[in-house]
Image (spheres, rainbow, N blue to C red):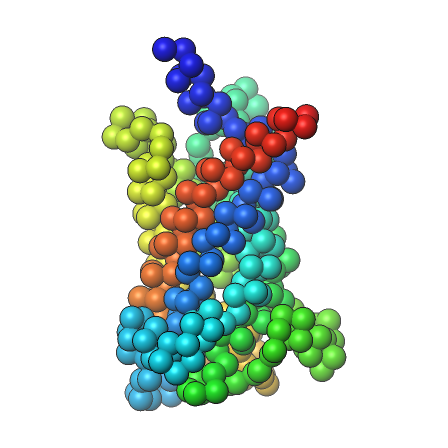
Amino acid sequence: MSEPKEEKHNQKTAAHKVSKFGSFVAGGLAACIAVTVTNPFDTVKTRMQLQGEMHAGAAKVYTNPIQAVGVIFKNEGMRGLQKGLSSAYIYQIALNGSRLGFYEPIRRLLNNTFYPNIESHKVQNIGINVVAGASSGIIGAVVGSPLFLIKTRMQSYSNAIHIGQQTHYTSVFNGLSTIFRNEGFKGLYRGVDAAILRTGVGSSVQLPIYNICKNFFLKNDILNDGTALHLLSSTISGFGVAVVMNPWDVVLTRVYNQKGNLYKGPIDCFVKTVKAEGFSALYKGFGAQILRIGPHTILCLTFLEQTMKLVYAVESRFA
């Protein structure tokens, strides 16, 4: 009877024993697996957020996420749905590797600072979790901003249907080099302030909601530690992220996709969008957001449990 208990204990503590580099690797790997599945809905979300930009009542090419998938597939094939995937991979490694990799170290640091007499992994303070989530998300947003910029423009570009301003890049390197050549290093970080807002808001609720739900279900013996627990906690977390993040995601998409200086920054974009299209414009692409971020969060956080164990096993072997 002692072996199952010992194994369960090892699984629970694996994440706390993985090195910072190991956490980065595990987070990035889990995110790449997830984004492979969800990128088509990310492409749909991007185009729906740009649809009718600054023109209230404009005709809609994409009426809902499922119809949009069909339209894109009909006109551009699977390659059209998977536009920006290469950039998304690199971005996910930078963003989620940082966000998920730095979350626990930052949380442990804060827990040890404010609760020095309690083991860090036993503390679940909502305020600390939110600060740790937002901080790690902001780090990832800054690191990955140029890749998100390229991804957004690659996803919005279409030979068949023009939505928003069109910028064509043949590859991630072509996009980065073109922007650097025309706008310098500063151009690569156009919209980073919007990225910080969007990712900080999303990260501040993602892992805290996940951990709160997970601990609640375990503490009240509703579910045992395992796949079902991870999936349910991830689903609730994903929906919470979508609700709070979508307005800033719309802003980020528009700031990144612009060629000129229609928007001076995220707040200016927020105000102009609401003034021209109404508050509901901030929730454009929300259906696609749910279909993207729900499965993405589920897959990412579920695979994170497994990649953490894998990295822990590798590090233990070579320690």
